[in-house]
Image (cartoon, rainbow over all chains, first blue to last red; front, side, top):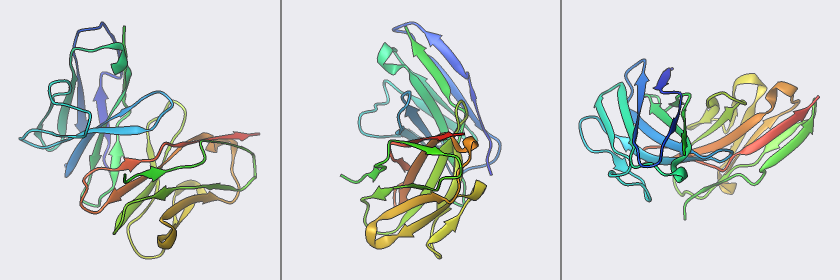
Length: 113
Length: 113
């Protein structure tokens, strides 16, 4: 199994600023993803983080707002840019191994004031 | 639109009662199916998964699920719930060819002692 850590675990940010969330996996994985979970709601896929190339974004999410990097097999970052209160959410890093099991990090709870 | 549906949004049971949570998906073709659990304040954990073979799969903590292809369903069951099963339960689907899991809306289970 893979263990995923995220930093920061939570943050309170002002409107108009940006926050970069880091995700580290303890083993090599094939795929990495970023999800958003609104309080009390389900998970929505933001994008697939591709190693060494641009991320693949889901409908409704764009690179300018959520730039993603994945410089190697075990590390990825998600930036939430030009934040507004509507971006307040939990952001989850996820990774899939060669057995097609998908693991989740503890999440980053973001509050935008 | 292709989707994952969990019709039970909030379930309240007494300890020792039997549990069945519904999950239906609308994807055609081969799918991989998962149930995840999120205990209060904790991150998502995999309960069980189905890729192929015996449609009745057993997971951790006494949970099981049955894949019924003709009904596009993957219902989660437990014969006797405990107070510690209080959590949010998510059904997820990985259709062949897609990269990431698509989640249902979740079911909040509350077990009363």
